[in-house]
Length: 526
Image (cartoon, rainbow, N blue to C red; front, side, top):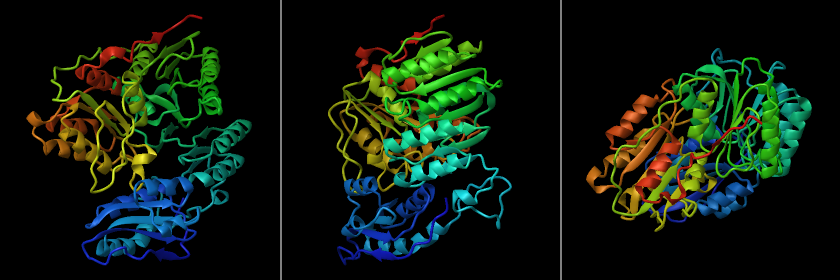
């Protein structure tokens, strides 16, 4: 959606008049909405300006105000803002902040750089769903969470599928959206849906995948990306990839979108296999989903990460990892899975503790199954501050809201993760570090560069081993070969999958008491 004009703008008075002093300022733009991608683009630009330590552009919803406060970026001016207002939060010198504020209007007025083929200057851009072409079949919704449900319901009632990228949507509203979609015979993907590929059109964070015969359904964005890229590397392609949002398989939501997507793919003659990807569903929901999958006319692979919650049945194969999901899918299709990977020899660092610093939340969850006692949160990064690492294993999802306040997601902006990597490399307690590098549409142009730059600053003999894996295809804008090469040149050890990297790291740190995460592969003829 396009930014709406701002009615007024207000600035806080500087807390210090010294030209070199660093202070925090909020500029509130009344009744001004901007698309989240435009806000991330603007924040990234402002953060790169000389003298700016931190920049965040967010709507003044309660969750966003809490995030700004936690990051030390909220002032009294911002606290007084209303949910419909846009807050520009900056920390830096007086001159730098003044200059940055002057740039904000032009940044928000910039048109999106990624346009569809055939679009041109002068085309009418709808500012409301009712202005869209009646032939439009899908709406992508990326408004602040409190407003997303209303827009999704409008889209569904106009006969459009809804891809809801927005997060912070109340659970009751998600249930209402999905009930309405089911009544209309449409799909409600999300809220908080990061990945889909429909009829060859990528939505959100998606890789450039070859077309094929596999349909994927997932309550996990990066999980879908990992599995689809592994299938692509093995020569298989994707028919459809339907994201559901992370709460779809909860007891409250009841897998409404997952079940609707199963019906859709089961009826599609071009789909030969269905793959489900999710963190562990609620037990009753897992039973319902697997019961429906067992009635399908085609085989199903269900990757429910973590402990088993339901038994396999019919032509349903249940696996416990992302790696095994891809291998099972290839086996079912009589394709040849890649040979089992054996990690090369590597010596742990001086310390005893693993530092797993993920951009993908599903990868962090997968690693936590091996290290259930690991610390999963540290104090959010503050520019100029120290990052305190625990004297225990650490598995972080740096795409969590706690770490993105004031900055874009680490798949777009590597600043926060690079700071955590710097701290881990210099921490004498670190035995090994794990990193994911996720490519594709929506990701940064060179995700490996900032991480490799941190490795280049520390001689290999003076740092712990860094284990990395790349999620992507060679057709992605960034290219897997170039990204893997840059990491290898910097001395990173490369694993083929998230599962392999986690198991390798745990074994390297001597913490393999819980066994490999890929031990479950249950099939039944029902």
